[in-house]
Image 1 (cartoon, one colour):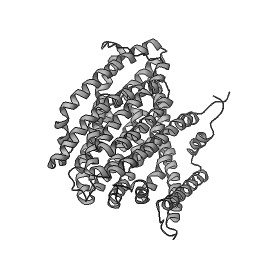
Image 2: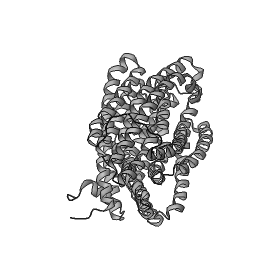
Image 3: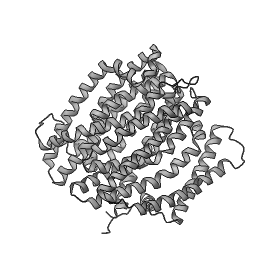
Image 4: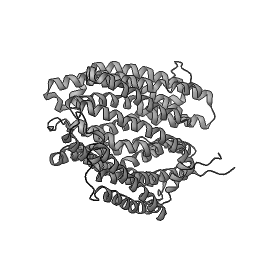
Length: 525
């Protein structure tokens, strides 16, 4: 029986996650295309952006993000001791807590929405209609957050057992249901139809994971013992995790806060424009970087629990090199080809050429920071495996101030694109600080090896983007229709991919072995 290397194991698991995530992200992109055609970057879409992210922030803070951070390491500890019955007791108690907090969250959201919206988007207070619509959408979306919390709980439970397929498929179901609901309800009841479609989608996302929950040993029963050692551990970790997530989410929300104060171009609300650009730039992060970090996290947690710092260090370094290999060409490609990409994907219906110009400028600025945005997922997983939520929280708190200062300064010069650029700069600073601290704790994260890989990957990226640029600007007539434009961009992307892989192989970029493992999985286990 052959021995499978850590890189091959990572690649096999990541390939499955990536395949499901690609499908989900493509459907998510289709969902955004539908929304863009129906609502463009209008004030109604901007109201929905705030009306969604406010409940999402609360859900992430109280349940979603905290669960994934503290439950996986806690269950990993229990599983490492072979205590299956103990795991069932712990998960039943956590599920009871999720139900209770979820109900309280929804009720509180209905009451607090009129207070939260003016704080989150102060620029909306100048328009009573905009303010009222945002408050209404916020209340509706709090219902969706309840089902999303249940779904995140199911995902954390299954991933702790290294069951990655059901959680990866669940977002696909979510997007299918949401798209169908939006197409049906959007033309009938406007932007509220999108909110109702999200409720149906999040409910389906949880329900589709229920069979796997049951197959994995979970049983739906109510039990809550705050004195249980594992529950005490979760409670101990939850408080700093919540504070850390609050910092992260507030940092992400800074841009929307300032964007609400910007005067929009005719038919182009800055809040909505930033949201479209952010969705595009997050797609490769979710497809590639998050898949790698998700697969690495349980192993990181077990290495940390066993006190094996060298193994944790090696996993972190592998994750960082993998992120650079996968994300650097995407980052440069998005910077160079932002405008034709946005025009091809979104420009139809209510999404006008003026909207394309604003969204493309925001995408270019966001894409500058794509690599550190992706690396953040790997670096923070290493901290979480060590049960250290305080360091990312402390670092992130400083980033909130830096982000606010830069966003305010940059938007006065570059408008909404300046806000996106501030996020990119902060991503570099944040990951740099976290890596410096982590290196002192774990030892050097194979720095020379990583720097050499970055130089090689950067060289390959320049050659690849140069090939794409030559195709797009080869003197051929501009595409007369959308199909022609798609053909040109498709040819450019294909050529860039081939040149990148050939250059990486020639330059002996070792992470290209990840791609070989994705395409040719070993038959033996």
